[in-house]
Image 1: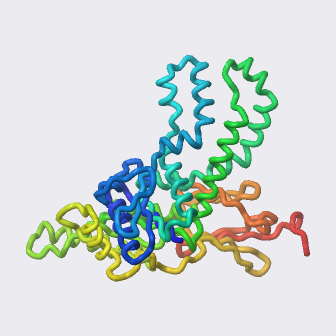
Image 2: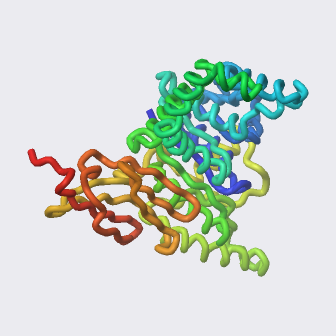
Image 3: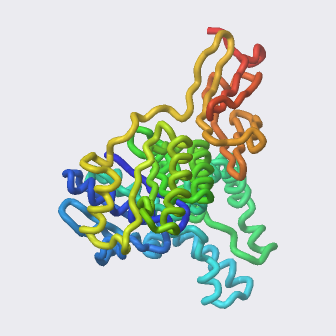
Length: 395
């Protein structure tokens, strides 16, 4: 089973790259599902096929799906929505306005990821290709399990105990209904499911991300930052797609100028992402819509090769013994020293890279150590730990 996620800056052609990759995988005999977590839902347009809430066959061995987020939301989150509606009703909010206010931002993308997990674990498909939302939304979504875990580990048990003990008093004093156990169970269920999604998508033997860009300096800069953030959160990137590459230009000075500018950006991309392959797709006269155009797009990217082929998976994070100390190494390509910050909070190492932060649960051995130093070398963060004599137990 393989899961391939495609993301990139809005408008670079990630939906086309995802659909073409899925088509090529199916043509090679892999039973393939392509699904979109992008609220724009342009996957059906690219495939030139009507899509529904269940996988439908759109070609030989190729299935596609457009997640019905509203149906999934009502099925899995209705207890929380009922509670929120009751609170808003007690505050005098009109029912129609209350219904609009209880729609959770980003719920569609979250539920689409749960659907990806379900399809990947169903055993029906060899490959699941995911057309993700643009990079900013995707990074927030992929960081959600870690952020929710912090809340669930620290605040959720206390909040649940307090509300359970004081529910009758709080309801009378506050004048609004207090959440029931069913509401807390729904939150716990969402946390468990998102943790399972994260476990699937960070398994380097199963899942990987492919970045899609166009040969523009601004787009390349965002792709570099995306690689840094994905590495921070533990997601493996195994390839890059450069889309809309101009031909040489010939005698046309305007086209030749664009081709030269793109060539400089592509050379920078090759150097930046090495040893990852930067596959190229030429600028086309029209949009690649339908199976024939997508097959030609895939041929430009992969030639006669299998789109599942890529570099062997390696650990993004590793812990090694170095004399009397331990060294935790974490891939953080392109991160600047000025944008990097480290902290320790109990049994977690807090790593901040620019606007993104990860609470990294430490292995049991490192929990009994103190941080003795850190350095950033060749795109990899090395944090040294020294055993604390007061905590360390000799075997």
